[in-house]
Image 1: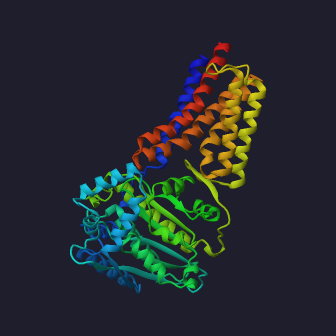
Image 2: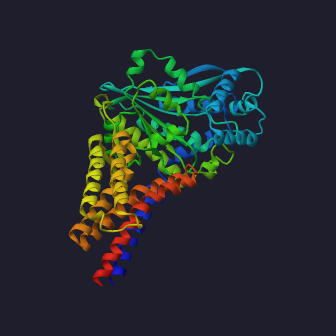
Image 3: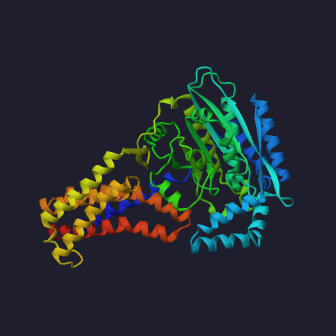
Length: 508
């Protein structure tokens, strides 16, 4: 009977964690009443216009999209400014060659395959396809800038997305739904004079060519104007499915993440994703502002990568639930920081360690707590060695080598917490529950408390790992990496389950 109870408890904890973990990173179904909300219908209409066909920077269709956006802004009462900038084929080719030189063998093969897919024989042909510049050596891109000033405002919020697509995609996901959502946000706050912060709305051009529009916008600001921007919100896409993840922030982000966690619209974010993003060697417009030391939050959907930069990145292929969640996030987060947050008082002094949990939102840990968890795991490993590790054979290791392995595990956990606290919680939290359960079972022989801690540990491990594995497998399409990551909690908890089975056998 104890074996059955043990199995049911452990399986139930894992099952609930899987359901809730995946649920956190998948958009909810949309109630019919929400679909009829005028703001959402405006977003749908705008997206159909923006993403009717490919509209790269130099294409005539991009000029049409720009006129549409300017007309909509003018109808809302905004005085939108066009900011043209010149680009040349030579400089984009040079940019591509520089990127290519930094790629590894696997990345170069993927890059070469992309050239073949779009029908290009060399960098110049690929650049002309992507930019829409079929003839000539240069063309103009044009940023769109609109500003909403509030008499009592102290800070300035910059909200942006790029409105160009590549030449091989209509760009409904990348980045049409962000542009359409910002357009509705502009309509939501138009004419407001009670905002806590001024808002600069920036729709950049030439992002797909190398962040040209963002670079030019920053170049045209003097130092005072640049430093007057207290927070940047950028909205992007690397696919057309899923929820908008907060996948990147400025480095010292504790204050900003703390404020995000209090927003009415729950945000999903993991403190380790900036590390993965850096490894991918990708950039967004936010990179330009981050390199200038500005604080910011970068959002994107990462699922549906099979449609990224392809003709299938169309309005018809964006799931209803994804578009609804995306536009709601843009509008709610945008209004929240404009209306409710004194962004001038937020500082860039320390990092935060954070991860989402169901129904709660973000759990945020200051660095000292992450360090403490690492130290706690190390101490528990020492206690494990002292209180019975040499008396309970595991995997037939001789006692001395087993004790060394446990010591090194604790030392690694503590070192990881100090060197890379943003990712360390994925190891230290599961190990903390595992070690507590193990020591209570070995030293105090309390099967029921040990089982309760193990069940809680398996649930928490699932909540931490399931959404990560799901996003890496489905969003980054890196199955091998997701399998490796999934093995970490499995290895941690298999040994614990064996211990509990042994103890249950003694009590039968």
